[in-house]
Length: 181
Image 1 (cartoon, one colour):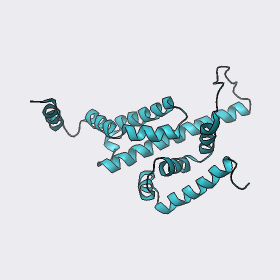
Image 2 (image 1 turned 45 degrees about the vertical axis):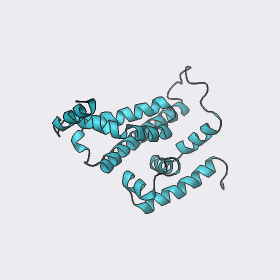
Image 3 (image 1 turned 60 degrees about the vertical axis):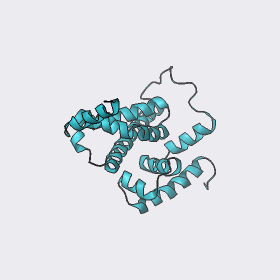
Image 4 (image 1 turned 180 degrees about the horizontal axis):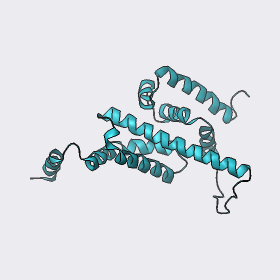
């Protein structure tokens, strides 16, 4: 008996309601795709790893809430990832406002190289977008997802996706100094 046959036997013997097995299978199927998306939504690979890890931790906490079927699982995981990003962006905005108003002292250990040339400009322009618009723009322009696929993943209509793309592109151009004032 070879290793492949043993793995198939173990998979068949695993009960369908085994939460750890389900989360493990989800991770195997979707972690690379989620990391690519997270990497484009975050500032560093470490942040992207944290986002993916938090997504799967939430999946592990409530495995019964994950819909059945590969496309539905992926859509659920993408929504969770985007929601985690939104939460972090909001926390960052609150922190930034607190620092700007002088309510919080800044650390001297803050990274001295916050922005690097073109990549930095694009990241800042993306960060200025609303979380949903940013996710839609990244999914379409960078990930190459279709409008119907994005609509299903994000849970909005295709018309709304097109609207977010249009406005997002305009806001990006303006932020990069290529748009009208």
